[in-house]
Picture 1 (tube, rainbow, N blue to C red):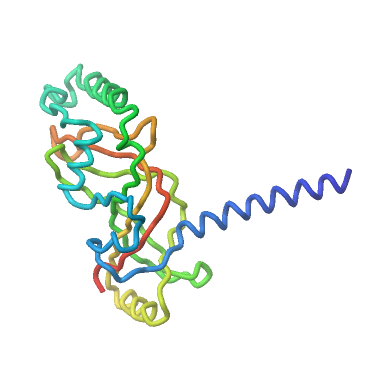
Picture 2 (picture 1 turned 180 degrees about the vertical axis):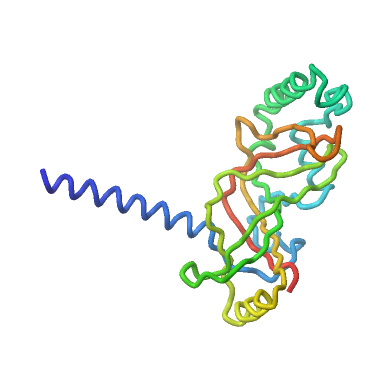
Length: 221
């Protein structure tokens, strides 16, 4: 009986450690000194890189056909009694229409802004803070959303680069990076249509991506 409990406890412990190691490996990545335009050189050949208005528009064209009539959906504004209902209907109709669309399963890469904070010796790199990138397009403002990112993101740098970056941080300088996220759309709720909270009547499109890979690019070396 005791042997059974020992085996069970060990199994649970190893399982938890394995999950932690997997999350660490996913979120801890080398800090690369390449420009976003060169992402194709490190990504899988079948990844669609969506980092500029034109490429994002082409992807949305393939996925959902045509932009919504934002004026019609918005109506008289947020206080219009039918506003929420029209927005809900738009999302449900678009979800149903894109079912089975090959673009749903494409591997895609988008970017967010990042900033390095202190070097964490135990984690082996610099902690990374994230911020969304908003891209104006003819569809509206596109803001990619991610799923399943680990809580701790760490950018690992060579000894020489680490020393340079630590010096910049010590001087109070901001060290910006680009965080490239690669994955696929969430099948059941792959795109969310909404309105901006900052600009009245401005449509916002939020593709929701299950991230499979991260890449950190140093953007202001």
